[in-house]
Every structure is written in structure tokens, then in C-alpha cells.
Length: 72
Image (cartoon, rainbow, N blue to C red; front, side, top):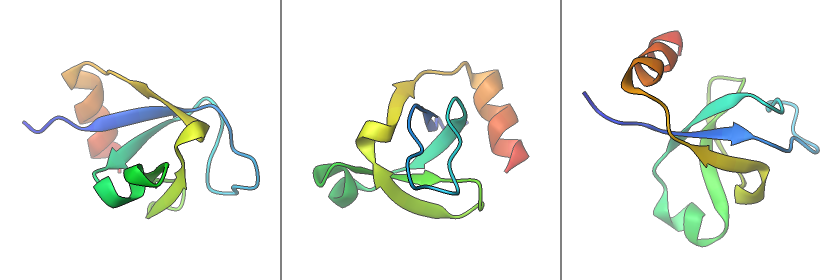
């Protein structure tokens, strides 16, 4: 099973498709990360770039990762 990266939203200023205190899946994007952004699957179900400062990284057990992946 593949491991996914997840973040917790701590800021949603001017972002209609983010919610504070919600967990989001992050897609790899080294170019975006180099510029201070993360590619996040937001409430629209699509992936968009958001400032890295809007999130904190979290580690989830495999069972939680699978539950969140199935919910997409």
C-alpha cells in the first residue's frame, strides 16, 4: 500500500475551498514546494496550490490513510 502525505489546515484566509482544522491530502510537487506552496486536494475535490504556511504536516496510521483515500 502506498503512503500518502497529509496536512492539517491551520489557516484558510481568502480560500473558499479550505477549512481550518480539516485534514487534506498532499500531492507531490517539488517545484511548488521550492516556491513555498503545497499541492493540496481541497474541498472542490481538485488539487490546487496553497501557501505552505496554511498547513502543518501530520502522520496518520495506515488505517486512517486508507479511510481518507477511500473517501475521495
